Image (cartoon, rainbow, N blue to C red; front, side, top):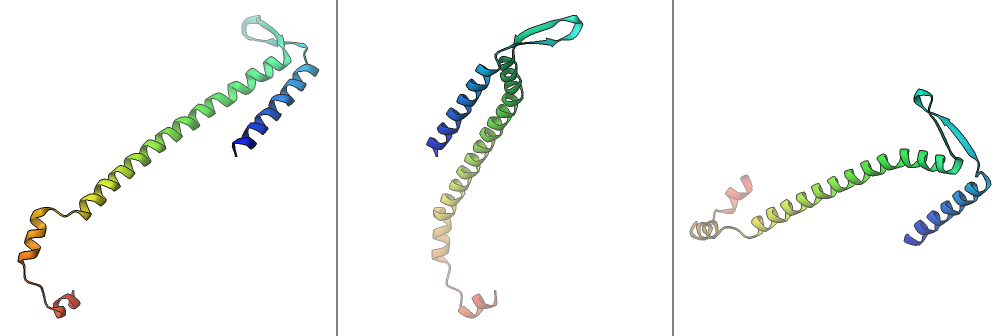
Length: 110
């Protein structure tokens, strides 16, 4: 799976490099207040892509981190509950040993 991910990233990089080579021309972007930004087209497209991708990527990583912490907390709580249920307290075990066994008829009716 890691190989396919690396292959796709390399292919996208090659496509971007070929695009940048064929479209390396200056473009003018009109900003506020009469300001103009003169930049190359591939740089402008890369900045636009990064401006849309990075906030969503940061949100995704934050959500994954939060969910992993929540799962770890739930698993540790479950482990503590399981160990507490498996090993009864010493007083409960002694009390159960002192109590006489109930007849089967009483157990079936419950």
